[in-house]
Length: 304
Image (spheres, rainbow, N blue to C red):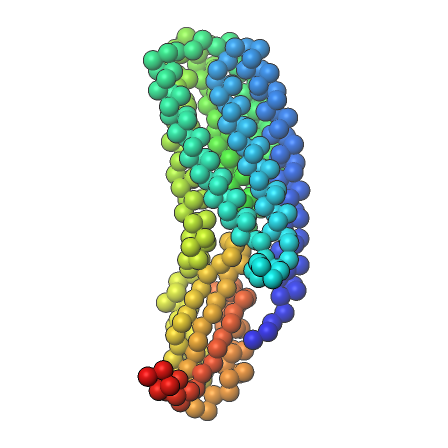
């Protein structure tokens, strides 16, 4: 059954454009600070800053991938990609989640190494550079906040920056503590704490993106409720082949075969089901195939 997707497409284009601008600003800030952090790490002989710079490098890569994903996601459907390219955003977000896991593992390994081989750092220089990094991360987080709940892709970039912000706070606290106590073991302890904080949030992102890639029922939608809502539409006597999935986290789809009562009008039933799906579940892309009981019996007889 045809329906007008122009409004939804226009809204998505507007959202994607806004996300691209915010990601662009965040990328510019992060890349600039990355250069500064590398220079500061070398100048102050701080392995902690250089290690954090490696983390920042992955942030820059993640932001670049997010921008590419949005650019590809805007491409219209074609003869080979009938759903378009929006799922590339999900692939990029999943890659970001895997990247965050790799970073957390690196942090744990580096922390273990530093427990056995403490590193001497110039704490004041470390503190100044980390404070600048904190300011950059706060601005980047502010830029990405608006789009993080509407896009897995932006959410992945947001989590990267959020992890960096926590890292900056940890480095600042560690620098102050080391400056006044001389306890160099504080540095790996902070590193482990950052890794433990990042991992649960990374798992949530990976779980949600995997659900989309596996075409699972979108979070927040209960399939039994969808089945009951369709079954309660006047003129529906039964239903089968019900599928609910999403091509991205803000575009849910539904297909279903319904069996009609003898007196039901197919077009009226289809229109009512589409309206109910959008009203109750926010599913605007709905395909309904209406069948008569006698047609099902004839099909079963022919198959036998």
